[in-house]
Length: 79
Image (cartoon, rainbow, N blue to C red; front, side, top):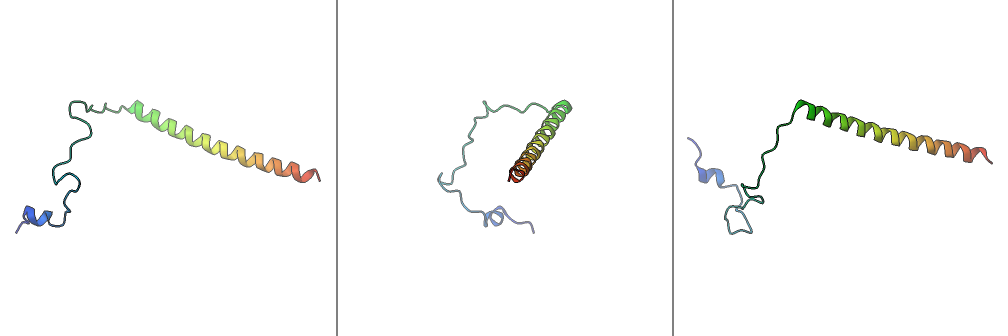
């Protein structure tokens, strides 16, 4: 026996705030734009940007560590 629609909807709470009516879309169908297809070049460019950003963050962290170590070394040697 297949479950009826009422059986399936028994556990689903009723919508609130709109009187149980369907929610209206935030963007009208006429204004909605189809996403342009993503080419292989676009994917490669995006991945390259992510790699460069990650490397820049690592480089900045390494520079900060080295600077802190250099300052600690210089402060300790001037006693």
